[in-house]
Image 1 (cartoon, helix red, strand yellow):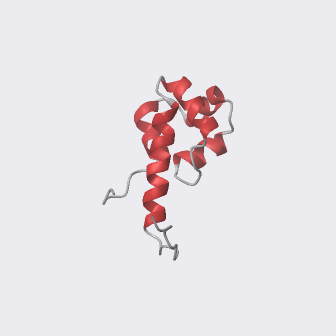
Image 2 (tube, one colour; image 1 turned 45 degrees about the horizontal axis):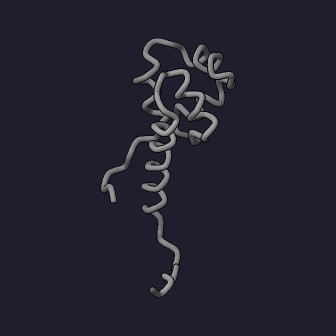
Length: 90
């Protein structure tokens, strides 16, 4: 288990976008600027649909974006008190 907080995938978008404005990227992705801004600022998750769109736009894999989202989500979930789940005896 990772001991550090993985970044939200939205924070890594800047590395891929360079000087292209969020408005232009949103237009190319066929989403609203508000939707993209929420992802960029870590206030919304990268969904499977968005991962596919980002993969096409940026020449990456959808799995890259979903993997980053999953790592981020799991790390954050593991910081919370764990439920009292009783394992199935093997």
